[in-house]
Length: 84
Image (tube, rainbow, N blue to C red; front, top):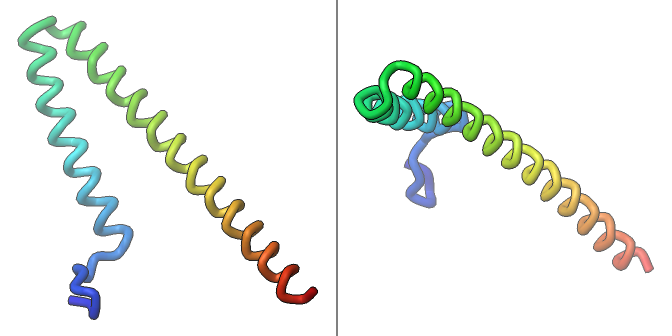
């Protein structure tokens, strides 16, 4: 445990846990889709879920990059005010 009481997980550990969770969720969706819509429906549902996951990851990456740029700009602005 860290000082803050957090787990000793690094980003790879969190990514692995997220992937396991997504795989479990996808497996449940696959079974439900197959029982409800047959093989074609299950395939379409899986493809749709994968596209949604990709879009969510792309959005998160863009948001993270945008926040980093904004943070750097704010730090630069703070530096300008300190100099003056």
